[in-house]
Length: 170
Image 1 (tube, rainbow, N blue to C red):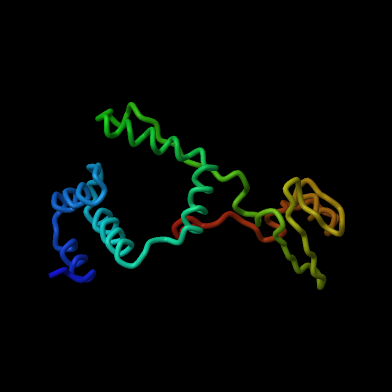
Image 2 (tube, rainbow, N blue to C red; image 1 turned 180 degrees about the vertical axis):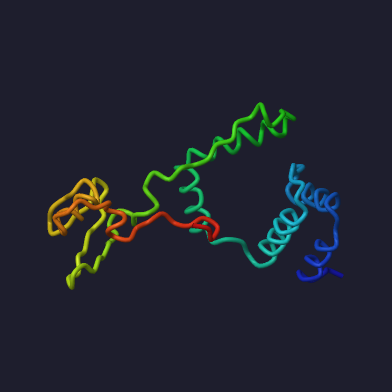
């Protein structure tokens, strides 16, 4: 008698890492380098569910593929995974962080910054090449703040755009 989907998932939940790795080999026809039991369980449970009830719609798969094609990071991840599988020590492989191209204090291009100052409301639009205020393009928020107040200001401070706190600490 065939087990229900819930019973199959319950069976997976009761397996240890070695059994999950064996089941991965059965499902996908290749061994896994994964040693995280929880991740492997979730991957196999998702596979069972997708097989029984249908996976992602084709439109979602195509969207994911188009994003992956345009991402240069993909090649680095694969290269590092190959190094790790080859048993190369971690000090011989490189790790990198991705720094965002835009300042986290300001909204993305097209966003608005609103400031109440001396009874007036001032609206600044963020552009790729600066900040737009009353139809004029300014190179910095400090220049916009000067235009409004006629005194020198740190633009981020004037508009209340201070750095985000990390982990709840100032």
